[in-house]
Length: 317
Ligand code: AMP
Ligand code: MG
Image (cartoon, rainbow, N blue to C red; front, side, top):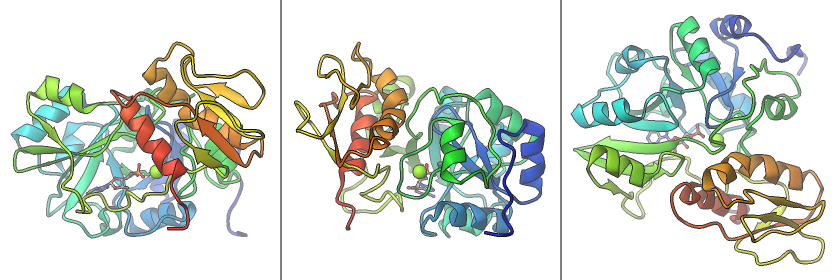
């Protein structure tokens, strides 16, 4: 603890670049959630990311690039991968692709796999950071492992007690982590749902998006319990039990200090944007349990239900 100093947060892009060049980690806004960034080529910086988060080492990190030139130095893009990248980058979509043999990426980033997860973020501040830095960063969400993802700079500052320099890029637009697609043998496989939905990919690219073969661990670290508040989470609730907080959606909502509505107009994009912030606010009330209204399992609602299922999962396993 002693060697850690407290930063006067938030920091500027130039200060963040300097911290990164020094091998330090930095809180970085993206359009999905805030990331905890470190130089992807630097073992010590990547180790610092895992240590700061308390993240298991077998859980690989997403590499964030400024542009396609940077991305193509790291990963092999076949024609299908190029088509998907051209259609959705920069944006809230991560591609898992074969890692180039000479990629300057710490093995800690990929947890020893021969594939790499890669993304071009759209957030203007992240883009400015990456282009000024001139090299890729590895960045998982900037939260202690297993806890709710941060969607505001203050969440990152609160989580790490000011021990991490943080860029303030405002509230995240998408609010849930990026969609992850693996592209292999001319197939697209959905590893994690997000704001870029399978339907969007299918209509843009014209081929089917597959789900992973069941039982096969294709995305290491997709742990069942994740994104969890301290309170228990009860799903598909019609109304709160006594003493329970309520997270509503559309007309399934209640009034009261312990109640929030993810989207009064039942808009799934708005609900995704509010999801982690509202879970945090209800959790901060110290309730034992948060009841959550049913969220339609369609479009971005698939990603919301995925995160809620993890928040509700048994934490003992
Ligand atoms: P995050 O916690 O948002 O950084 O998410 C990173 C997730 O991306 C990990 O939990 C993995 O499931 C997935 N991922 C990263 N690299 C790979 C890879 N090479 N192959 C498959 N999944 C990956
Ligand atoms: Mg995360």
